[in-house]
Length: 144
Image 1 (cartoon, rainbow, N blue to C red):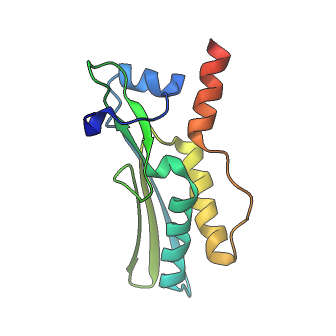
Image 2 (cartoon, helix red, strand yellow):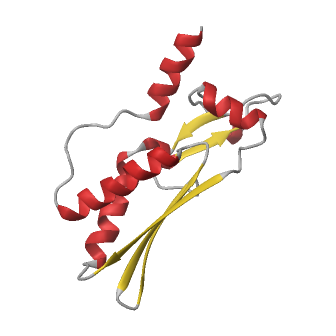
């Protein structure tokens, strides 16, 4: 089976609409500026923890043989679908979250940035987050 014909999860209704509207390559960007004393390594670790925790940030979209809608394929490592960049300029730190519109929306970006802040402040919540592939399947079942 070709690599692009990988097993995966159905798109949510919202993702299907984005594909049909040509939004497969759309991106969202959110930036937070932090001033004061910051431990850069700890901030990077918090950002990495969020990427590991949320499957949507490690998702790619694989085409099916014969065309049609792609599938969501969750990878083990971070992908280009999400980039979290932590940088320093002068006395300020910037946390930039750049994510594929197929993987998140503006509200999701707020949640992810808040999780980075919480991870920086202390140990992350041990509760498993609800994964988007599960939510997408629930949406599909409701429509059927």
